[in-house]
Image (tube, rainbow, N blue to C red; front, side):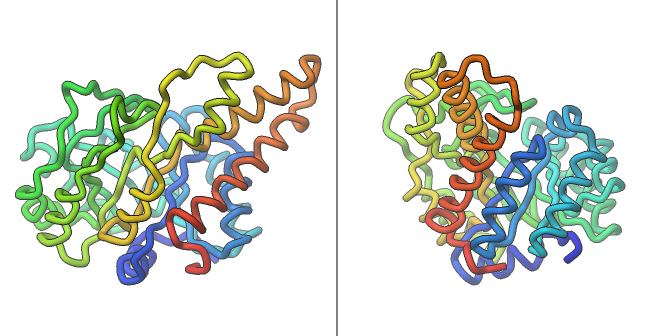
Length: 309
């Protein structure tokens, strides 16, 4: 099966009351763990590439890894640019075979965000590529995204209709209380479902995206801390909140930190058990299996998209 854009998968997800998992990829083991899990449960996938991952692994290598995953799984897979910050970056990814891009103009004034997003949409749609825009700003640090709590802002529902109609975007990322990275909440976890409900009322049938949605699995944090790490107080989004969002207008849920934590916790454990280990297969292989286990859990128990490929 060739790569697909997100149009059909989002339509099915909205109508079916589930969400598609958008998992960030950085290397071969992560790609394999995610796609093998999806194949086993027959789930559609979005593989996300940030600007940092593209620089680290190189565009061609990542695309060839994803090409291999298509051959191995025969699943509907979209390749998506996560947090594109310029027209030039989005254009490069579109020209390089991505089937979906995000243009993140959330840091710009409203009119400038519209103008930049519209420019990307016009180019992308000519190539059959879907576009995700963003209104509102999530706090936290992840890859090149670094927003302080002071600069974070919830999405204003009264702006969404104008933004979508004037830009022509295919999906919209909103800020309702999630954040990037592993430190999402200082107090009791809470999401602004009232904002999501109002956005859904104003944009009926339109796919909404949730960034910063890792659950920061305590098991991984504890394991990292046990074997030399220092992550006190790391907390993520409770899975029941993600399930609720997926049953509403949210059709795409982004997961990155949980993958990093799963891989890091496993590698740390393997080195603690055998400090002299020097065969990468002996620690990256188990890390790949842990990612596979994590992704299967997300697809089945959180996103609800198992069996929907």
